[in-house]
Figure (cartoon, rainbow, N blue to C red):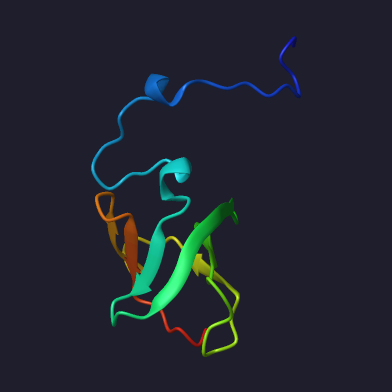
Length: 99
């Protein structure tokens, strides 16, 4: 009971390596997000849990042609998330920029 309502932390080096296709949220923060058609949606600013799936909070560098400054994109690897590239720090999504 001593650690109830207490924050604990560990060094990133202490975290276990994840299997292919799995990610720590901290690794996705700051990655560029582009559509599979090449449209730049912005960068991952945060992630949130919704119960059914995790959601990327993507902030545009400025309001884009669709007037969007922020998008919420579901992290669904079987339909929306096409690729997560650690080397280029880019996430490719199948997403309509107008949404």
